[in-house]
Image (cartoon, rainbow over the protein chains, first blue to last red):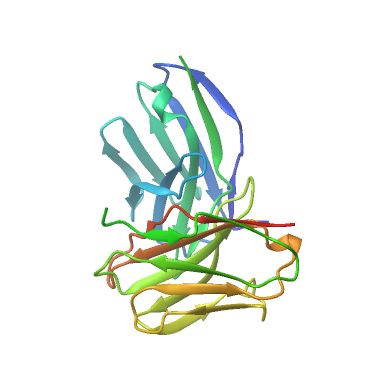
Length: 108
Length: 113
């Protein structure tokens, strides 16, 4: 079992829809949870990070962590074509472990 | 632009050749990381420096790979005797000691023919 599991997609949703992206993890020692966005041929860009269980909101983005279930989510409200990218979940104890990334397409 | 920069952005080489990549981190960041990303995968940790000291190396970093950060500023990653399996995007990231946020560069895409 890999430490971080993420469905690679692709996930296609119409513009304006709510997007839900998810990851599961196996190591309960992970302390710091992140979501990165990566456009084609670019480096990853940090979107959100959190240490604790619960929700954290930033504009149209909400990160959710459930440590008891070892499950993290990223919600995107009012999705736009510019949100089309690969979304990588990541978590760390000492070094960062990334999921495979989910390719998201927002259809105009 | 004060972000992380990497050069070259693309490198095509023949199998068996040596290649070297450069990373310039954000100026005040003392930690520097190298990752490798292959198609359809997330970045995988290779090594990291705190100032000029290389503190950790992944088992992915075979003896053909060497990284340096001689003055604690820019870093180089050299691959000797390249193999087709080395084809990947090589990403550099930097962070400030005591923070958890790593900022990534645009990557160097290596193609080994």
